[in-house]
Length: 81
Image (cartoon, rainbow, N blue to C red):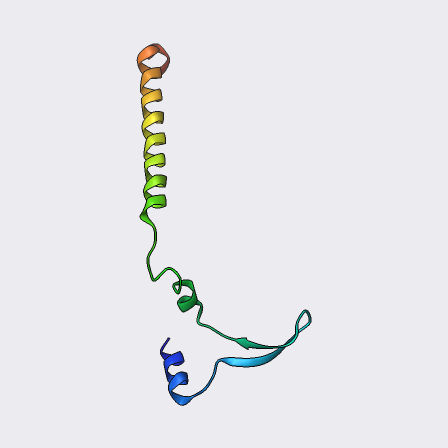
């Protein structure tokens, strides 16, 4: 990120002429991947999918624990040492 700022101040461009077999000669512009990844998202992420996954995992764990407890209470002879 600092390097891009330095290059902009010096007037250097991150563009270069590249030959591509599909498109012939094209001007390619290199962009910092970390800046591009956050360019549309403005550095934010959505909490809803994360919360949804957490609730699903918690629900599955509770259901498994409840099902196991019910099996133990219904047939205690099978699970006693």
